[in-house]
Length: 615
Image (cartoon, rainbow, N blue to C red):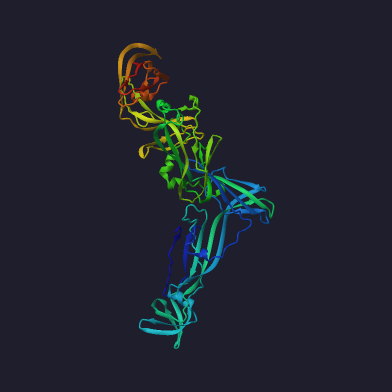
């Protein structure tokens, strides 16, 4: 029950009675007192907009655009209104667009209302029972004495008074912009008067037992006063008694979608080569089944039978942390960061399409390789994809998703080409005093440890992009790995790391060949030249040929490489040197080899290099 409720307090004194107030602070999300059930139904005001959510456009960063539509008839002043004011909206994104009529002004403010009603409740005290049966004959016991008479009155120095306490804007439901105070007036007394044959007697209510009343009325009327304060938007059109229709839209936080993938690797021939016997296998390409689903988190508001559009792309809203003044909030509430803090911690970087690091897997274009093959994408019947303006939108079917709920929606299924590729990334750090061998690598999305990784190279031969998301790799029902599938545009290629290969082993040696003193003078300083040799060895212990790519980075200038290696010289990098030392006179070298290693053979590339040290 989403209320803050204080229990009834009945206070008595020896000299009289006191009035007790039963205070309930609610937020309009239901009525714990049952008062609403007894209030008369309020007819719909013709000037009140009947807003319906038309669609919700959801981005991956926890923001969404809500579009609503409503119609009404202007009142005598040419104004319509709505009490459905959002609790959050970004500055500059709150728009009311008329379809009929012209809006002259839009005013947001607070409205205070008060309503009174009566309700019947069961009597729960002796005094309440006396109050409900005044004028009736009764009998009761006080100790061992039995008294009979007529209930005359309860003793009260003051009439029943409503006492309400103001506690500011109390709201037990953080999602409600309205707040209300409901006051129930009850009576409490210590004494009542009963008329007996011997005279009127004042009876202490707490001493009464076994009260008997002829035709007892067990209910009493209770006064209910409800004071409420809520937001209201008033739209002035200037034309009285005119039909108007508007679209209300605003960009707000607290709704997010998260793409996830399941990639089932098969041994069947690739999509492009199916039908050409043996071609797919000879090329090394096979077929993979790719499934994508969207996980939608809603901490904003209730959406009833609303179509959701999920967006692939990088939204740019500069004032996303600044609230619109039209929502009457001092700060921009973000419930999603509280409801799912770990998930929102990932939203800033890990699943962003905007970071180049999240697109590092998209290293080449399928179109550039001359591939024209396309494969059909099996979208659900109710889902359509649209592209344009550097954003791609999946239009999902209508569904009901209330605040606090989560949904999982299948988005696509398609067959794609893939091939296994083995990568070995090496970094060798040099020192001002010695050359050393370094071996390091974690997930090859970043250069690190000296291990050979198996990756799958996926070709997006569809007409829709793949957005950055978590990917589960499967071999039928056998899980292989979970990694990050980076953004891949149609026709692009991405790589997803699987695991470290146990059948491919590599080692590398870095040795100094010679030194030449006073080989260079620069800025008045003498430098010696160190010449060295790097020898790598990669052994294939598999029973099949494997394609491998070796990347080697080190501080210094590569002068000669074997096996058709490609040299890329870059400017000085402190990370290439122990303790970030070194000298800016030296280059940073990147060497790349691409080879196919046959079963039982070794690939042994070498690099000759030089660098300069001050002496």
